[in-house]
Length: 509
Image (cartoon, rainbow, N blue to C red; front, side):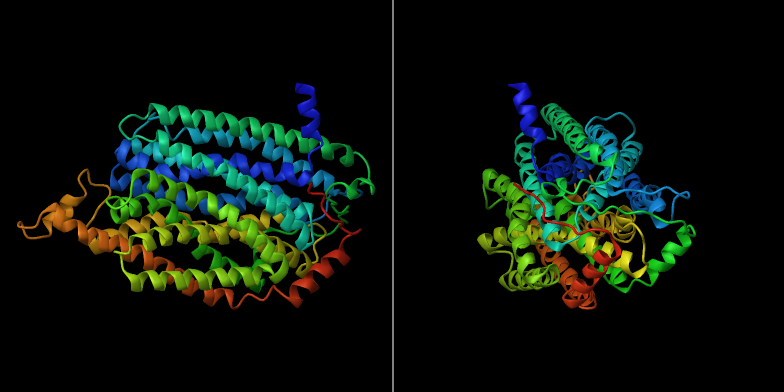
């Protein structure tokens, strides 16, 4: 029975195994995003100064580690090897799989460090964030780079992304289960739950990367077998002739002239901010806008749907991308976000059912947009290769440079959100009794019950004005992005002409 199962796993299509790696990231990362702030604020009682220091240091490290790891991984692709040496595509893929097999289990272990108090809250907050993000960065960089390395055509990359979305949706089920065991007063059940998740993730990374490595190791020992490309992803066989080695300064200068890259990172910075703003403040919005009007089970349902629906929605968005192109779909989602926010603002906070739909849909469409943007980055990888006539696409490095500019939005989200809430309402989440600050600013005749509407109104304005501002900024920057339509087709054709061979279709099922 065990041998039969292993045989079935070995014969799974490459696209399915590649997509399964998203499962082992999402089962942990969704839980992290939802609970790490609440854990340190409400359970470990971190003080405001330590929280801000930790987030500031994390902001710096979170921005620098992506390009740093990307440069260490891909700098060799920007220049030639020693005379007579060459890099074949199976070797590039194997290099990325080895990195995933090492960093995946370490990522799972770093996830566990959040849920046990082992140091001063401020120190633990800083160390846990930096360690967790380091391993997450290594996993994300090499996983995303494989998307550009395994396929060139938009259809093939869309197929790969389809399985990523499918498995990410399955991984989001961990949010449903986490809600059942989450208890600030008794943390034991939640800790056991996190240990089980980390164990599943670690085993999954090891098994999936081993299956893929076995598949490509035979191809790395000789020239790429033309017959195998009819069954698996075709990867171009590239050689790198001897030429001048490119320095980091020269690479950054090349990126500064890459107009579409600059407009994309401007748009994506806002997108990352909005995604993490929704994740960090979703429980707060449920508590102060809907907790007294919906049941606990309804709140759990909204929470779970907001994590699963983006991935299921993305399956439909990917079919739209095949017909209309990624650019048009992303632009449509920006307009939809703006329209829904304006409608909610006009309706007001007392429309309970409309508010439920808006809170869930706001996160669904925002996260859905994030899932599509990796396809845009792979197109930028192609354009970078064509513009600078590289011999091998430096995909991990370009993903890292995108993150250098956009990842600060992940840190800005909780900082700006808490500041706006405090400035408008006086509510401070770091106080042991947050409403006491609001009461002290009001006449003594007012009660906490009378002051709650002020906090509720503040949460509502935060909920609707943030997506309105984000949508307007994104539509402005996205309108300047030109890598779509005929230009994108021209870039794809030029990349194909710069590489050897032709990429056939992916065998997905």
